[in-house]
Image (cartoon, rainbow, N blue to C red):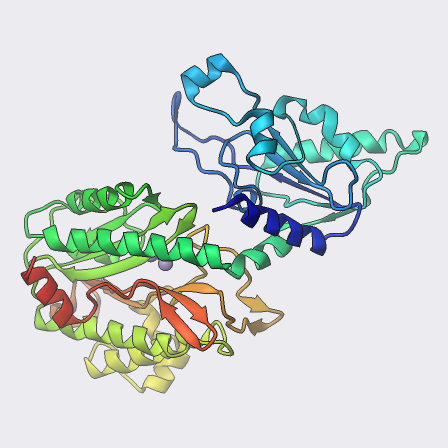
Length: 435
Ligand code: GLY
Ligand code: MN
Ligand code: MN
């Protein structure tokens, strides 16, 4: 993404704040995996959204109307020895030259400099509760100013949570964001197809995971979240991530995995037979989930409400489950009683963006949000019937199915970014047979 995209975002945020207000955004901290081994570092999404700066130990300060500099970055200084051990740093010069900061200071000097920026300011925009240590720092800076009131210094009188403004901005994807998300989707589609091609009975779940990771990494991506590869009964565990069981003949495998490209996620689930041919029971349930997904797609267009796709999906699923004898009763009553939740316990989707479960309100007041062009969501109905499900015929046991695509709301409807996947029973069977 180009610097001007980040600068546009900062400008928009400044327009929504007021002159004299100050926004403070720390990036994510480094997380330890074990002893001195760190998890791969990922910047905080809000911070990155405004800065494009991927290094740890950085804080952005945005001060609309300030004469000297309206965008300041605190970051690590250049340090030859540290860079030899741990990698390159932009340094203070790079922060200004490459990332558009008007001023940059060493992160170690923040306690000396930040109180000065808060002196006599209007409101402080900061999201409390994400990083307890940083919260304490902010409170400390404000208290320092309160101690100086007799010297004529005004401490900020009002704190405003920054995420409201920022998360609403993030909900509407720009042209370059949509481009990045199309790319993440495309790379993920190819990786899923790769897993589908090589799958056969006797393989281990992690072997399919390896194909996905290969597909992501080959294009410079990382997994947007831990991949789920669940064969048979494991497909009924929603957040199964062990991925260490054998894939068995006549069972389904459920793969939920997506690449993150340029900090933008995709989120795809494919469910297919390990041996390439659906059994009659698997086919019946798969086609039901697919029909639910199509009913949900139909409700994705400007003017529809957030919940409409979910309502459409549960209607189709409930009716279908009654028809197959898995639920018993009148569909209308079963929907009212949420009887489907025994087999479909999650929602039909979520916002998708820099975070896989992306930010943005789902309700405005007490009303579900109206869909608008530029919003991006997943559509992921499913049915999960673990072995031992009481009152359910054995032929349905151990079938876990989810079908998940990424969908952009457009001016006149929607665009499924992940539409190049084999999706129908016929498409999957012929794809697996011919590769
Ligand atoms: N991969 C997480 C989800 O589908 O929501
Ligand atoms: Mn999802
Ligand atoms: Mn998913």
